[in-house]
Amino acid sequence: MESYVEDILVKHHCHTCRNDFILSEYQIENSEKEIMCPYCHGIIVKTYIKCGDDSEIFDILGCMSIGHHMDIEEERISYERIWEKIIELKIDNLEKEIEKLKRCKGKYR
Ligand SMILES: [Zn+2]
Picture 1 (cartoon, rainbow, N blue to C red):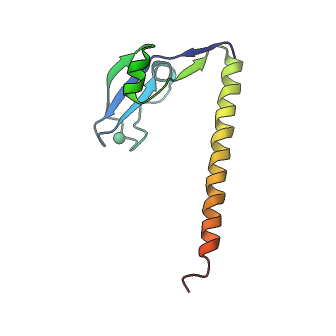
Picture 2 (picture 1 turned 60 degrees about the vertical axis):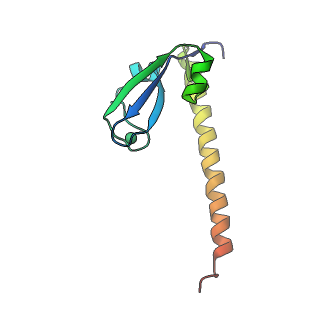
């Protein structure tokens, strides 16, 4: 897809749980919600590193890149593919857990 662009990454620190997390500047500017910590859902967060396309800084941040498609249709297709993959992985994990539980069935009577 041709309209993909890498976003400027912004590192945040959560003052509630003291974890760091990364968002793209595009996500922040286009979000209708407040920035929320993905670990504890705290809203007392501070922005403290912003970087462009410097791959060394990406490595330090622990993130290769975050981007988006300028073309709305390409962005929609990409978003759906990502969520289909996430749902597939969650189903795989649940099936593995069910198999583990089935093997345990009857062991603790
Ligand atoms: Zn937090």
